[in-house]
Length: 424
Image (tube, rainbow, N blue to C red; front, side, top):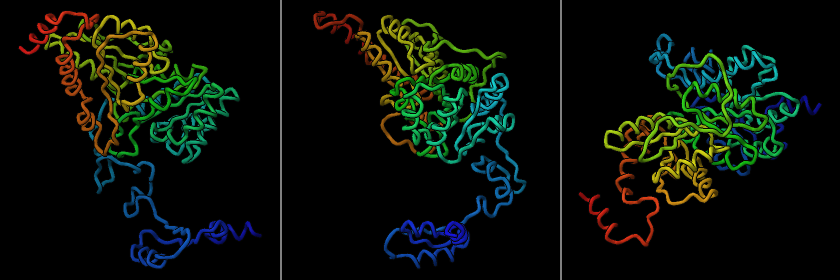
């Protein structure tokens, strides 16, 4: 009988917990809502006002399809059609969804999990293809991760697709429920980096720092959509917790390989040879780094560009060899500069006792990044092509006199001659 009363009388359970329950109130009736607020104003104790609203209220198209119209881009309000410019370049989200379906067709142990973001993460395609292997746990990232851990213990290969910023909610579960037992779980972190129009809460700038410090975690970031599809296969094949972070929006537009292949674990690649400076870039910063290197070559600087691929395990062999070959090292990441990729590189060089280089770290400073399109924000923080070029060129000018092996015993006359030449 108590259960029936609780179901039939709104707010009864909340009142049993000590809340003063008011409502439900029609949230679209502003005068009624204001009147209700005035009535409860000044009352003591915890108060819960229950307001009912309809998503997309007043616009029929949005009311009928709340998922599609959750965050629309440009559209024609009269015809309810999207008018965003068509592009042949797929988004990373789309590549993820399509690739996971391909992998799922070949391996029935692959299951997909999301926290109320099937469409936003691209898992709607997997859901349609394999409805019995798709699980939407609602807005409960903590449960999504623990659920994935349970599936892994039963021999499945769970792919947990969560926005980078939202995985922060499940950090305890990542550490204790997944990494502590070294379980095979793939975390696919959409919106890794500057998320743009969704504002400060959605930027995925902390993931590199908070994931790389967890034992057993593997962490990587693709330079383009082709590498991304191979990284997804790599993550699913690895018998360890593995995270891939990738940006929001369109990919690069490169040719896609027909066959998927697993990438070598913890190995980067040299994309451009150079002699003066080495730029070690991660993920979305690789192509801007390549473009900046081309601009630097016009000024007489030849830059080697490395695609790091992995944050953990880091390609320490390539990193140390590069540090021994180049006096100047630049690390570029679309993430918080504190505790992220550059920090990992520094730690590795110190661990191997490789010293004497001049360093430049380029990333997001210790600020709360505001609302804005990714292109504007990248320019604001000097992470677009022009920003990288200007900052690296200035770095080279300021540090040109520094050379490997320079010590305090070097003659003062030699130092003065170098400084004098720089001033010309």
